[in-house]
Image (cartoon, rainbow, N blue to C red):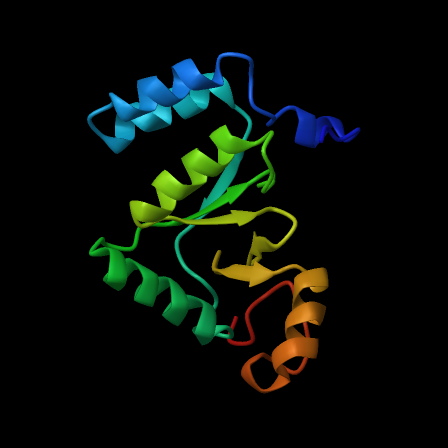
Length: 150
């Protein structure tokens, strides 16, 4: 199903997706995968954040747990334009999976942004409101653009 949103369409699978998937499988390291990613979707990654805010320890703990289970070192939070989970975005899903398996945490820019003081990842207001609704005991009382300790 194609979408009318040009941002989402720009990350749909290109006609040569199968060739690109073969290139990825023949690539020896993450650097090579990143080169392919940057050629195919040069605007997908919009930022990197070193860690989550201490205000949200459950997010950091989940990331640590995933990395431990995968046997990889935690790297950075990669902030991307979008990730669509459908049959027209297999390539983006493949890149996201490979990055996650290499210790990155891939998050949409609509979900997280860096604290304006220390640079740690904070949820957007929309995500904060959803988190507060689902798990009010594990998050700060109020949303903000900086960490509570900054």
